[in-house]
Image (cartoon, rainbow, N blue to C red; front, side):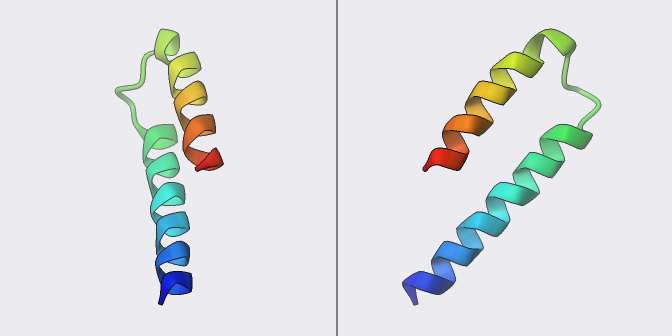
Length: 44
């Protein structure tokens, strides 16, 4: 069960990353903040 939840969490992370990368609302000065935040997200 926990293994399933782990896979689901990874899938959600990747989906969110793709959403951020494809979002047209991301300003160039926010890219660094997103990078730091996503890096923190992947280390969880």
